[in-house]
Length: 403
Image 1 (cartoon, helix red, strand yellow):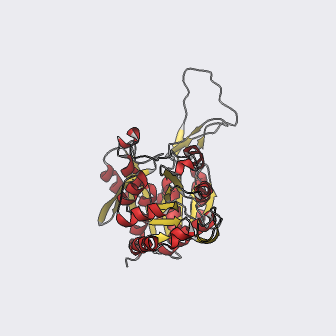
Image 2: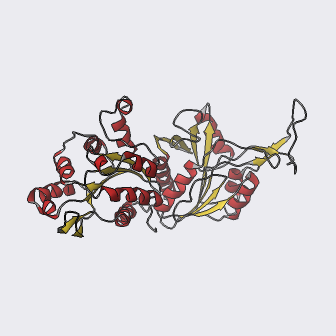
Image 3: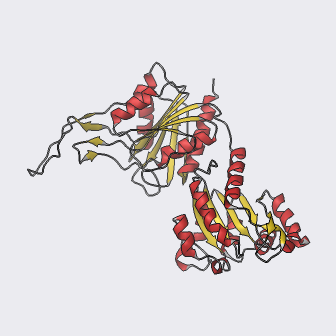
């Protein structure tokens, strides 16, 4: 599929109707397009397709009730509403359309729609006479006037034996429509800007079995690559070892060690922007054993030497990008350490995050960044890394406009 929803968090609501069986395939197509998916079923929907099917396809627990004691103890419906970057209801019944038009919230799905600020899309599916009824059409105009995206319905044969408008759009068509809308609405503030991003950890081999590494997952760097591409940039991503999929439209170069990452980054210049989001090892073994080091004594001493300082080298390179942005993972004195790095490495911007704190830094889907530049600073988050990435790139775009 050519459509991309890379980085999107789609909350899929499934209503009661025979077309609910298509929602299973829709989950698969959404994930193939790069989206994360969570599913909410109405009470009636589970009579058509079970929660286990959607959980297996989405990789996430399925919710169906406001009265789930475990989830609602932590205000689960609000957490879901905040998690979503967009809400899609497919199939959307006449009943759900009426609830949304008049602000009713008597079940989990309708409550989520009221609690979420994410864009809402509806893919209606119902009998053609229900669809054409004046009440349904009036409700449709109400939600459309509020900015709700209406996908379909299609015209054709229906399960009831009748023919006419009311068929659920096919999953591919729904994904294509969502992707098209996302692309049209994306801010192209980095149109044709060349962006080079390093992401993930580096592994420094000790022997054929062991290595020195760190806890970086690469999620922040990959989120930056996806967001930069969506903003119109030409993106090259130099990645350390990670299992993350390559964002759509991004050129990826895989490396393992700090030295390999240095060569790939410097070899990728010139660029307009360099973002050093990788967690590059500070030290590497002075010597790498060609054979596995056997356990022979109570103590093993490893001699370590400094790895290349990629960020500093980029900042002083003759092909220096217009903007050089570094990352700093700190456990204390965050601002002092970040500003010291900003000055010492002669970069334009430092994005610092406090690691070892729940919901921030390594291995987390969320992050908080304190961003510093010569005459200013700001904080991004706490929120999902995909949102932090968009906000940081908006800052970078603004900096590029400075004389």
